[in-house]
Amino acid sequence: MPMDQTALLSVKIAYQVDHGTWSEKTGYDFPALPRQTRGNDCGVFVLMYTLSMVCGIGFQLQEMDIPIIRQWWCLLLMERFQIDGYGHRFAFWTEEARSVLDGKILLLFRVKRKTTSNLPAHVQAVQDRERNDKRLVDSIITSKSAEQHLVDILGGKRSNWFPLKPRSQVPVYIENEQSQSIICDYIRGILNKTKTQLTFNDEVEFICGFLLPEAITHGISELQGLSWQEAEDVFLQGPIYHASEVEEFNKRIAREMKNLPNKNLDDL
Image (cartoon, rainbow, N blue to C red; front, side, top):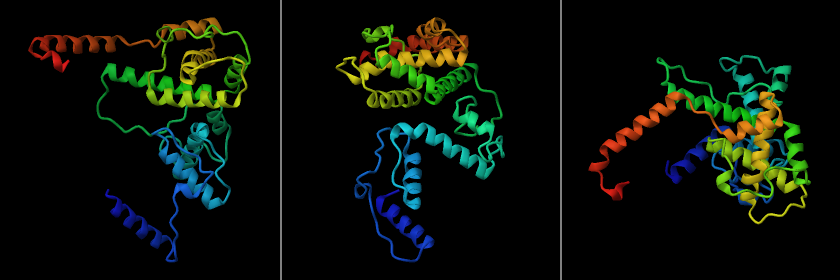
């Protein structure tokens, strides 16, 4: 929608809410306004900006708080609108609601659309792995012991990942980019508020090559009830791919190779 139409629509909405005089302000008018750096948190920031202004409580949030704030809004919306599948499950901060915040129950941010046919096996496998990634990230972020573990290794506790290894020797493990972004922001928040004697030149490399493997290993250990060595073996092994994914990949490569002679090398 063009900017002039957006402004006109905003004026109409404001007039319906209150016929009085309105004053226009931007984020630059609020020096303490928390800033968004990721591209997937716009809605949560707008909700918290609005809530803070209406209640007159100031902007008491940071970007690292967004994952837990997102859960809080989900609880309120599901309770208010009784979204199918939840009903009053989270009414009045029940034990189940507290279990969500403790990471013991996985919270769905979107209600699945009903489908008339089953998904292909390779598509279902990808979705299952993304759900597992999210469950792992949620578990790490909501676990006080995970945060304490990161604080301990920043304080000098022995780690197999420091001194830093070459980037090629560090598994990614979590493939979903949104999950990667959320957990890295969470770890960066811990790093920024924790004093450490460990030296590093590149913050991104320090997080990805040291703190991230430690956090994921700890999360796997807690989530799957494994010993530290077992959890580290799972981390080093990396994601497990379903046979249907391998089959689909081989088919796609075969199709591309079949058409390869007809392609210009500049198009590859």
